[in-house]
Image (cartoon, rainbow, N blue to C red; front, side):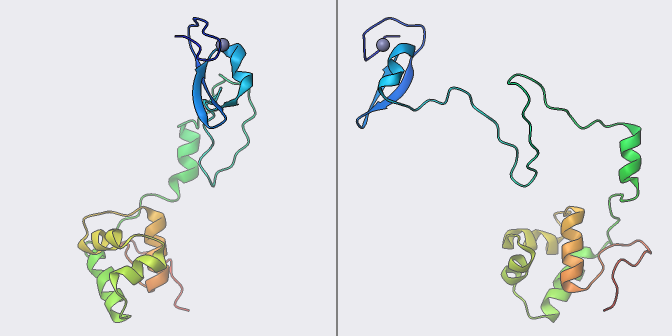
Length: 152
Ligand SMILES: [Zn+2]
């Protein structure tokens, strides 16, 4: 590749912006413009779980271990057993409130298409969503005996 600034043959060029035009230049010419190609491509942690990770580049971040100890921590919250007619329960409770699917979606912070799938029983939602639905509609979607809802 040839640097568009000095004409030198270089193994790789960098894109810089010089007065509005983009040039492919060599390492030593990049200071003449604003660098467009990031030197390092950081992979920011997913928003929400902002865990500082200041290890040197190239290091491998700690991975959660799937050990038996860890399983035990979560074993008290197994995947919920849903009632066979959980989709219908959502629809009935929603209609009792005269909410549209769109409105239910908004209240759940979910898309209407998800509500459609839920009511059709075609999508088994994550437990978090189940809890949200249960709390919002004051219904139970689970088939287990434990009553998670207080009839407040
Ligand atoms: Zn150059």
